[in-house]
Amino acid sequence: MLLDLLGMVSRRVGERSGRDLYLSYLRSEEHTILFPPHHDSWEEHVDKVMRFLARGLNYRDALEAMVIESTPEVELYLSWKSRLVGRVAVKVQTPSDYVSGARR
Image 1 (cartoon, helix red, strand yellow):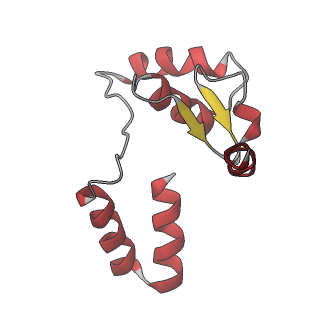
Image 2 (cartoon, one colour):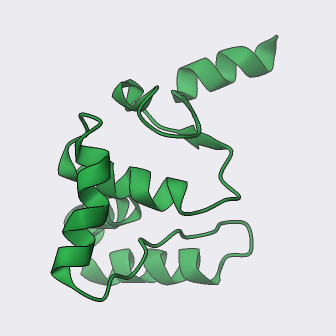
């Protein structure tokens, strides 16, 4: 997801700005960048991803779910992807649902 943001920034205002934004996220004490777990082989990667694909997730969503579920500190996943509700082992809310709940 961060790489998507960096791609949009790079496309609009240049690659250098995208790289600078990436470095600012890496240095930030307010944000934590979650990286997918490293696998020793492609076969091991496919084995891990298949567990998520079997839940009906596409490959990209499966990678996100793998990162989320391999990070015990994650309690809530805020995403526009409402299709992840019930397919990820943490609570998933859209930003609008989150904001609506905060107003109560």
